[in-house]
Amino acid sequence: MDAQISPITDFSKLLFLQKKTAVAWRTSTATERLDKLKELKNWISKNQTLIQQALWDDFKKPSAEADLSEIFPVTSEITHAIKHLKSWMEPAKASMPMPMFGTGAYIQFEPKGCALIISPWNYPFNLAIGPLVSALAAGCPVILKPSELTPNTSALIAQMISELFKPEEVAVCVGGVEVSQELLSLPFDHIFFTGSPKVGKIVMENAAKHLTSVTLELGGKSPTIVTSSADIADAAKKIAFGKFVNCGQTCIAPDYILVHESKKDQLIAELVLAIRDMYDPQHRGIEKSPDLARIVDLRHFSRLQSCLDDAVEKGAKVVFGGNILEDELYIEPTLLTEINPEMEIAAEEIFGPILPIITYQDIQEAIDYVNRNPKPLALYIFDSSGHTKEVLGKTSSGNAVVNDCVLHFLHNNLPFGGIGNSGLGKSHGYYGFLAFSHEKGVLKQRIGFNNATLLRPPYGLKTKKIIDSLIKWF
Ligand code: NAD
Image (cartoon, rainbow, N blue to C red):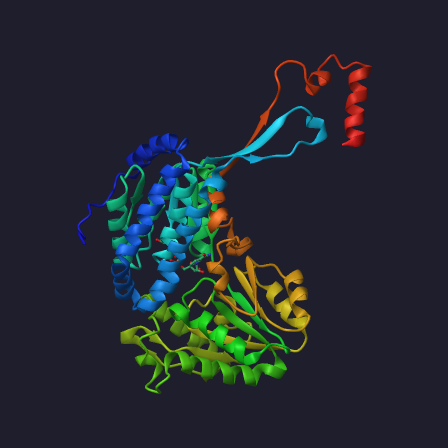
């Protein structure tokens, strides 16, 4: 791999060039777009080991996890788009309401134009290239700003894009906050941002200056409710995987558990078993596991450490884990009980391998707990009685999963995204295509006399009667 790519610094000029491409791509055919997607998929397949290596170098992400959570979601997104793009692009017929008698109507999916994609570090390949797939499917040129915290993956992405695209089609601008801010000052046609709610607000503020549309894929505290009727062993295995994959650094990871009081002890015992089964099957110590990623950098490591210290100081009990190795940026999967609202861990998105367990007695208590916090990105419920419908009906979350967690990310036919504090707009599959498309409503009127002719001035009695009947009947 040639690591020496000259950095792009004149962003205004780059956007100016991409604006020309955007106009040309307005009429791009499905075949032209599909060719780009196929090339992208080929590159990824051929360079799978380079991607794995970059992710390992960045935060010791196990290669199987890189395949499962970074490469597969992207290739699956491409395969899905290849299969469906022609039908997505077809104008969608709009049926005719009676007052529009004699007209025809359809929705044309117009590429929004130049898109800016800003991505985070936690799934640095997946969350940069997934939205790129949707943008290319929709016919949009892209400037992509990957995270500065995963420099190896970001450099590889830049390399890949420079091999596949001209800068006026897709360009990668590597760098930190200052690069991001400079890009955000420009008049893009759409911004697709994945990251924290705090930075999401900055993105939206900047976008407002140009009335640029935004998709905000943000984070938050995703609750996991375990009811008294749940299959506890099954729930524990699924929660342990969803929580500790990527070392807990997952936007949709279960942030905390709300468990029925009667099942607390059993759940803790099963979680401990599940953690050991995954990361310490030979009893050599979890820190020796090759299957547990590390914390991305010292800043996040210290943030998690102080969050844990704060919880313990304020009365939380470590019922499992708690060991840390600063040199290795290692934090053991940790289970906490005796949580109270004064603790940081109860207020901030944890984004690491620490799992607070809170009990409830009545399901309404769990619902109230969820509703006291900002709307989460995902809500999980493990239940086999009648509580699921009640919980899904009385709470609000970006997505929800029943009797599992995090898997919805891989479902191409579901919209993925948050609500309120956890995000704005949707991604994945058709919904990703829509995020980068303007749904242009087109009405076709016949030439000469038509229904609307009867509605023109002068507004005599006859015209007024027609208008009255419109109000009365339609
Ligand atoms: P972040 O918001 O700190 O950074 C994301 C991107 O924004 C990076 O590319 C960064 O360079 C840029 N950025 C940072 N500060 C900025 C500023 N002041 N102005 C302009 N740009 C700025 O997020 P992160 O730490 O990389 O990722 C973790 C967060 O992302 C968590 O909150 C997590 O829940 C969320 N997340 C959400 C999803 C999702 O799909 N909804 C997926 C992954 C992560």
